[in-house]
Structure formats: structure tokens, C-alpha cells
Image 1 (cartoon, rainbow, N blue to C red):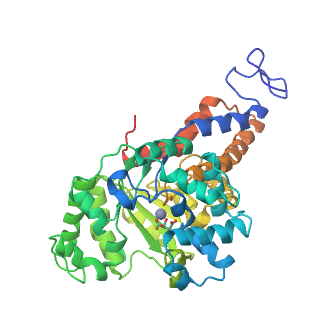
Image 2: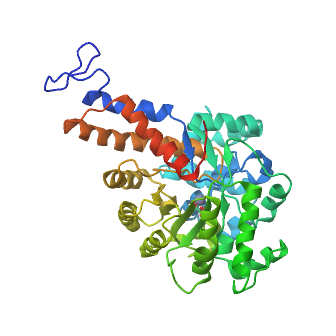
Image 3: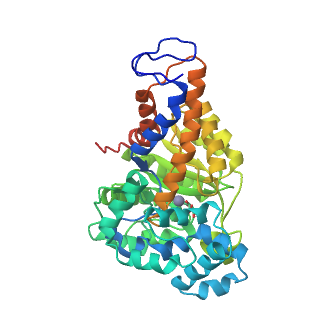
Length: 434
Ligand code: RAT
Ligand code: ZN
């Protein structure tokens, strides 16, 4: 029986307060609230227009996304060396032919291209590519960004900014960026994982550090972080770590993380994002598509959360096997915020499983997803997929409360969706979006 405002009642005839939903109303209320709430995309590889060509968009960039390149090599006889000799446009042509013309685009990444084309009312058939190229060529980037974010239902996105990247540095040194929909993040992979190959770049920026990160190096790294914080105003610091990462150990990663980065995060009031579980370059011939996944020892995370109780950690893990442990650690340490279903985890079947598990163990005290978009228009399909899976998982959770005798109102659902997709992140980072 439907609850009506005149005489709201559940199946047992119990009169419900006006705002409570009946079991049958829950799914559509969840869908409406998910689609009308703008999300904050807390981790992407997108760039604001100030970064010029670093910001990728359009059909050729979408088709040459490394998730699709990995799939291309499974459905084409083109060897990687030959593929890399092609121009971007030729690569896009080859991927379109292999994955969209000769095969059905049923994988997550290929389906995303179809969803983007459809969203712009572009054809999706064999001849679609040329029309799409003309369409994207005629867009002006500023307006296009606004339209794409609107379609994706995101109010702002968080970038990934590498202070040792020469092209990025030029932008930051010449006034930086202040686009209100793009938030910076200080990404530290080259410092935390690639110190031997990069310490001299700190020296060339005027910081007294050495190859072994000894002596005054720690003070030098902390000065470097403080100066980049002043220049960039990042929301958090971040690093992607391998499946073999451990803390504490004898590595330079442990030393720089424990003695420089985490103390600086605390001093500057920033959380630290750890993305754990990459097995880098298991097939280097595939370049960016050549990384795999491995199960990590999350006792490293336990040690970090316990040793740095005043620091806040945003954590995503790449291996499916690590997901449950991450939830358990979040129950033990309230300075740990699990986030996202990252990279190989961002498939509906796995997102559904992980999100159910997180809700069951953590309620709404986590951040369900980020897009990891590298190409602007990807936010459209990635967030559409997230909303679709979340509608299923959240309405199930509310139906269970309802069936167990609890009331669920739209207000409750709205509060929870806000918390999951906005305020957990705003509170963790101090971001004020008004
Ligand atoms: O998902 C990806 O695109 C990966 O290649 C990585 O960039 C990962 O998200 C990361 O931030 O390291
Ligand atoms: Zn990423």
C-alpha cells in the first residue's frame, strides 16, 4: 500500500508521520535525490583551462584513454611498438575500429564512450567518429566545462598537481589558477617514491637536500612543501603507493613520509591521501596501461593511523582483497576516511559489493566514489554509473531499515547523500563551497 499524505500507513496499517516514505517510494526518492545532488569529485586528473594543453578533452582523447588502450591490445593484432608510432588521431581510429566496430562496446570503459556520445546527442553507429570530431572541435572549452559538469552532476573536481612537472610548474610560477570548480592537490609520487631520480629537482628549486635524504634534507623537504602549499593552496597531499609499501621500514619512502610529509600535513592542516596497491609496469610496453594490482599489507596503514593520531588520512586501496580490511581499520581509527572504488575496482559489480560492505560496516562515514577522470567528458559516464549503482545499494539499505520497522524520510536520504558525496570531504579538507 502506498503511503499518502492524507493517510500515510505502512503494510501493517500503522499510521506514518507525513514525511515518512513507504517501501515502494524509497527507490524513486533515492534516485531523485542522487540525481539532484551535485557531487564533489575528490580525485581526478583533470586540469582547469589555465593549464592549457595539460587539460584533455574531446573524442580522440576519450578513445585513447589508457583503460581502452589495454582493451585494444586484446582485440587487435597491432603490437604496442607499432601502436605508439601512430598519431593520436590514428590511435583513436584503430581503437574505434577494434572495440566499437568489430566488437560490441560492452566493457565498462567502452560503454562509457557510448554514454558520452549519447549525452551530446551524437550518433553511436559505425560512422559516428567523424561527426563527434566536428562537434568537439567546435566547442569553446570554458563553456564546455560548465556544460559537462552540469551533465555529470558535479559542482567541482579535484585535480592532481605534480610540483615537479615542468609544464605545471610554469603555470604555478606564473600566477597559478583560481578556477572555482577546480581544486588543487599536491601530489608527491616523485618525492616519496622516486627520490633518487628527483631530489636534484628540489636542489634546482633552491632546497638543500641530498641523495640519501640525510642531514638537513628533511627540513629542506618541509620548506619545499610549505612553499608549494602557499603557491598552490591544495586541499590535501597525495601519493599512489605500490602493493609492497610498508610503514615503518628502512626505505626512503618511510623516512620522508614519517619525518617530512606527515608532520607538514599536520602543520598545514591538510589530510594525506594514500592510494595503495599498484604493481607498476608489469608490462612496460603498454606504458600507462602497463600497471597491475597487488594485495598490500594494510598493517602499514594501521601503523600510520596509530602513530599519527592527529593526522587525517584519505585512503583508497586497489585490490579487492584489501577492501574489507580497509573498512575494519576505519572502524578502529577515526582519522581514516576510506574513499572511492579506484581504477580496476570501478566496475558496477565491484562497486556494488564494496559499497554494500562499507555501508554495513561504516554507515555513511566514508566517501563512496571519485571519478579518476583523465579526460573531461569521462565525468559524465563515470558519475552516471556511480549514481546507478548507488541507487540500488542505498535503496536496499533504506528498505532494510523500513522492513525492520524504522522510518525513512526524504530528509534522511538527502542528509545521507550530502554526507557521502559532499560533507565528509568538506569536513576532512576544510573545503567551504557554500
Ligand atoms: O586510474 C588511473 O588513471 C591510474 O592510471 C592512476 O592515475 C591512478 O588513478 C593514480 O592516481 O595514480
Ligand atoms: Zn588517479
